[in-house]
Amino acid sequence: MKLSELITKDCAKAAVLFTSKKRVLEYLSELAQQQIEGINQHDILDALLAREKLGSTGIGKGVALPHGRLIGIEKPIVMLLTNQEPIDYDAIDNRPVDIFVGLIVPDGEHQAHLQTLAAIADKLRDKDYCRRLRQAQTDEALFEVLDN
Image 1 (cartoon, rainbow, N blue to C red):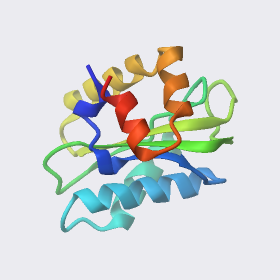
Image 2 (image 1 turned 120 degrees about the vertical axis):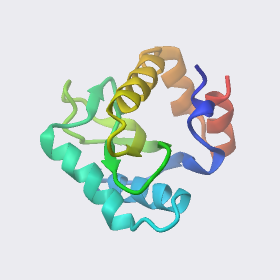
Image 3 (image 1 turned 90 degrees about the vertical axis):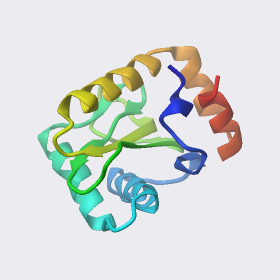
């Protein structure tokens, strides 16, 4: 599966510069809110933060999959950020993170949520793919990697 099937061009942001986990989550919620009419950005952020309270979504090797469920949306929203510098994210391997794939799914769609997370995680296990994501310096270049 190509990640471009899940992530739209306006939800792929390359070489951003954030210095904290909270700011990354805030920005992901901003991006998601732009895709969903009638949903408050703070509700999206609350969904992401609620999941982080259960345990870090930093899956290791510089990658995090922050995600949450939200009432009032009909389809999943997926966003991708690459940060210029890795930041502390409490990842399971204690390494800093510079690739963030955010996922907001409709509440109640547990199986679809798990399948989407698994597909994304599987794609991000490829070291060469992650290297190419990290090398993209523009949003267009990042999306081009997603489309391959």
